[in-house]
Amino acid sequence: MKVQTSCFFSSSIPPRCDYCAHAAGTQPCLSCLLGREFPESGRCCLFRYDPLRRVPTVQPPIPKPDAENFKL
Image 1 (tube, one colour):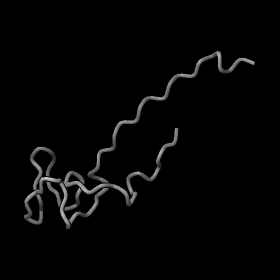
Image 2 (cartoon, rainbow, N blue to C red):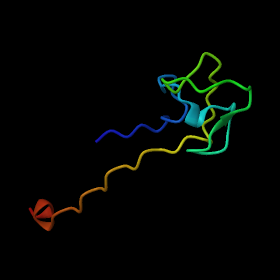
Image 3 (cartoon, helix red, strand yellow):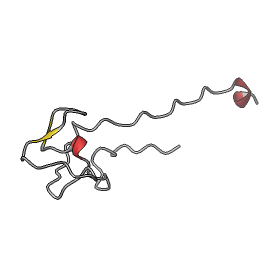
């Protein structure tokens, strides 16, 4: 299983108001510091990524190794 170590700073992160630097508050009471309305798509052209606002998805647990796999 490959783990992305730089997923917070990747350039392929889709823009969302939840983790924009211009957003204030948290869901569901999120507001824009620039006075803009939140679009239906959840993103705007003034999006600036803030890695500290982004909550990562929970990774699945690593399965416990079976003792049979370590026998010679």
